[in-house]
Amino acid sequence: MHERRQEDAAKRPAAGAPRLGVIGLGHWGRNLVRNVAALESLRVICDSTIDARRVHAKQYPDARVVADAADVLADPAIDAVMIATPAATHGALVAAALDAGKHVFVEKPLCLDVAEAEALVARASKARRVLMVGHLLLYHPAFIALRAAVTAGRLGRLRYVYSTRLSLGRIRREENALWSFAPHDVSMILALTGALPERVIATGGHYLSSNVADTTLSHLTFADGVQAHVFVSWLHPYKDQRLVVVGDEAMAVFNDVAEGPEKLLLYRHKAQWSGEIPIVDRAQAERIPHDSAEPLQRECEAFLAAVRGQAAPPSDGAEGVRVLRVLSACQRALETGFAVELGETR
Image (cartoon, rainbow, N blue to C red):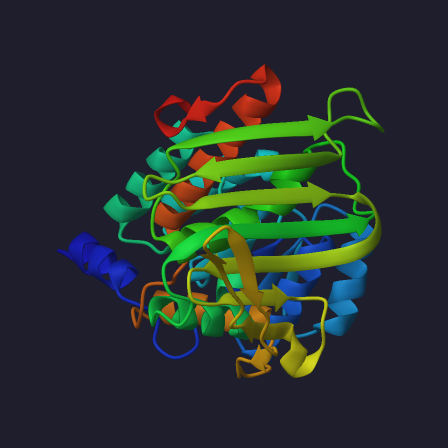
């Protein structure tokens, strides 16, 4: 009877602010710590690097600082963990956290294998735990406004989507530009289309390392005729983070590098034929209003709400699997040089 009461208590959302541990204090882990602390849920910080632990111990004196993730997972006072470690470690850490009874947020990608990702989602469901993936741009106010405009039919029927995520730097050896940059764009494209593509084609270039693509171009074809392409590179002379959505009635541009209201613009351009003559009517850009909340704050709030049992997050485990299926298909196309059907991603 006592064991049953403990089990039932473990399945109930935490009262008040959920108590979180953050594992990994790299470039993005530091941002997670900052936001979770501001939301008054930070309890434990974990990193294997002594310098990172020293810095964060000074910045967040009310949080316990540890070197081993096992210490976080073994703490019964911790309701949930946020994982911001290298992608290759995600699968094992997520599984261990779920087995320890924790709700889990993991930075993108969920893991590196589709079958493993599906098993993690099933594991979370069986344990009645939240599993959320860090597809940050789903929580960006400009993207939320863009998605609402598409859903409301302001662009008409979708024709194609084009995304660029380009910069100079953030070069890696443990993963290529596709896996480092493209998850955000694939996540947004799937949210806008509401479907998985039927097939993908991908090409890339290896310039700094023989086995790591520094730039990739992926083309996605959907059953309803919508086309999408994703261009990513960390060898680009300037930063460009742009999502262009073209419908048969209007076009929209989400430019994340732009400031303020220029970040999201609607163009009611028209292009049609008059006999044998193409006619293009250009329209002035219209601003689509959106708030200025920090996307990461929104994302962290969504995770806390999910842990409390208030609402399922847009980037739940199932969404993470869908994105991973597309990335895996693009990787296979990149390696083989052939188109890949989405049923062939494993």
